[in-house]
Length: 116
Image 1 (cartoon, rainbow, N blue to C red):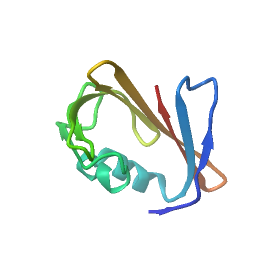
Image 2 (spheres, rainbow, N blue to C red; image 1 turned 120 degrees about the vertical axis):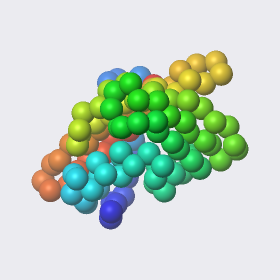
Image 3 (cartoon, helix red, strand yellow; image 1 turned 90 degrees about the vertical axis):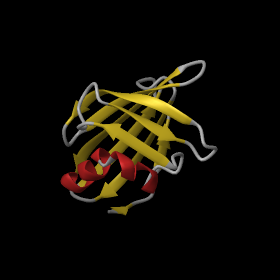
């Protein structure tokens, strides 16, 4: 998948951090990468490993491992095939919500990640 330059934006719609990046790839290819949880570390540099128990559906659980070796459990909260998914990670003192969505505009997919 060929990726274009990224744009960082901060909005009130996302109370913490939002990152939008245009991607020149078919939606099916993007969705295949998103749903290949063991492959997440290939494009998410904050991870060294990821697992998922079962199918990529709401309620499914898995683990992610960070470069410093910490392992955290996550749960898929929402899954909207070929357009968006949300998962929550249990941290020692908080819960992190990661939302990823894609919107196609003029042949380019805009991928937005929001961390709450």
